[in-house]
Picture 1 (cartoon, rainbow over the protein chains, first blue to last red):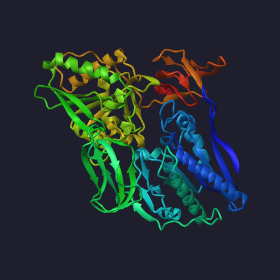
Picture 2: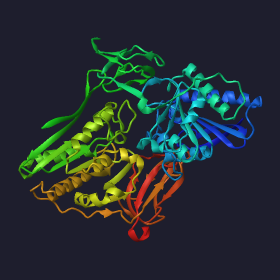
Picture 3: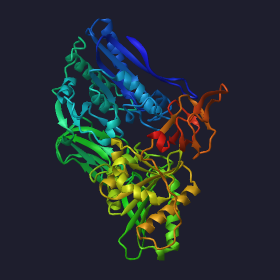
Picture 4: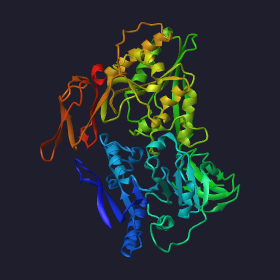
Length: 307
Length: 311
């Protein structure tokens, strides 16, 4: 293992920010794995730290294939993590909205530029991604459909589901989108936590990444078998919105199969506890997202069901 | 008349309500919309909304048409000094046009667009952010320049900045409205979290002049200034390379020469000047950093080059 500083930034009042990369194997740039770009992506950093541990062992036992270099970047924004902020602490900008970056630009553009230069030319890229809403996901993998996408590759992770997402205008400045534009086959891996550590889903993500690496000939390892992945378009996912604001009491968990008409949750009046409404699914399928903040506004996506 | 444009229930005993005030007089079908408060830390538009509304109240007989004033598209943001939408960590000006079947803010944005469509002209007032001060200017993307520059020239601003369009800006209010045929002018002026009365009065005169040209206003108007239009000119960006405290040494809005000393980045601990900041080109200093703490990359100034130098 070789530990390098990929990018540094001086601060007026704090120790220098160093984005650290862990390199395993040698030769052609096979895979880059990126964890936290935001200050609350603790689970994403944790999954990377688990990958570092695993790859260290694989390297020591000679199980990383020849001519394959793997890079793991656990955290690009620990400045925000250390002070409890999600975005860049000074100006609240999002590093993951600054790619491909600009070396003469603003601070987060420079960070994105410095990092992206070191992430280019890898054949594959995996970002441990998070969602902006508080909630749990069924661990899965996504790809953005940029026209350069071989979505079948997602099956090699062995998650239960893989989703193809159509990019929106604001996606064009994300790491994942730019990786693809620069010809890296890029995936987003979602676990079911962000600002807390969920050991089980971290484990699932690590095994999924290892399955992918094995199938691409990067490592030699007995890996726990995965699912026969079901490949979905976003349109095959039913979003269910709350019709009231109040206290949400959920009745289902991520991964459960539900039939049409099942009560997924109840919204109660926050003061007197009266039932304001039930949230029912109109479709049968697997629950793949559950909103988990106790307070909920009207018209909030609170459940997603894979039909 | 005060109307509700969009409403959604928040979790605990409160609704998010977007409101507008409609001021109407005469028979003309012309309609001008004034929107502001998309970013909760931008307050210049709040005073301007008051100026416009109170002046029209006092001189309603001179109005022929409809003026709609939307002072706070992001009321929770203004209330909590939050640039984006509190609780969502989202920039509201990246959600438009929204959707009827989306999340709360997507539905709200969709309702706002529905309400604004049909206006003859919409003025979308921003005030930079807390970091930079801006001279009164209107920003227009290249594809809409031919349609919008004639209207922008009526607005009594100092600068019309015609910039390249970026994909990410396709989710702004102005882009959405312009693509649907509602001519929308984006104003940037002053600095975040402050009210610069001088700029507000300047733009107020411009709005009256625009209304006069649209034949919605029968009262007197002042002579408006001729703005610099950035077409065929380049903009020089001055970014900090060092981290520290930026202290400018030239007046905001002045004309500078290339290599002029425009400020310093200082280190309060070592008592050293860590960077001497120089102008990167000749021109008008139309943006200047207001918030002193800087990192490498922090934008310190923007300079509009003269035509001959840009060519």
